[in-house]
Length: 97
Image (cartoon, rainbow, N blue to C red; front, top):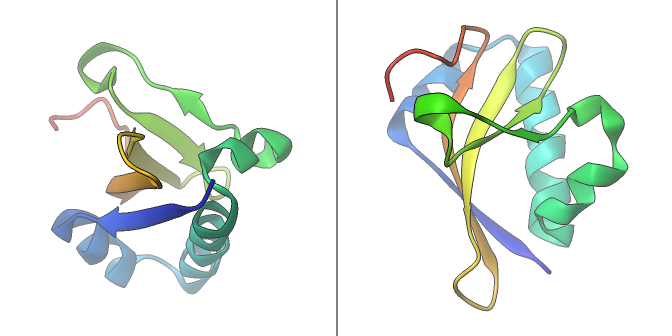
C-alpha cells in the first residue's frame, strides 16, 4: 500500500534546522513509506518504529538516528495511507502536543 506524507508546519521548521544527515535519513524514511506504506518499517529494525504512550498515545515514533525521531500518525481511511508527520526532533517527545 502506498502512502502520502503530510508534514506539519512545526515538522517543516524542525527539518529546516536539522543537521544534513537527519534530512537525508528523513528523505529515505519518507520515500520508503511513500512507495511501500508504513508496514515496510517493520522490515528495518534500525527505525525502531513503535507506538507511543500517554498524551502521545495516538502517535508513532521512528528513529532517524540514535538521537533524532520522527513522530507521526497514520490515517488508513482511504485508498492510500496518509502519514501526518507532527515532529522531527532530538528532544524528549513527552512535551506538549
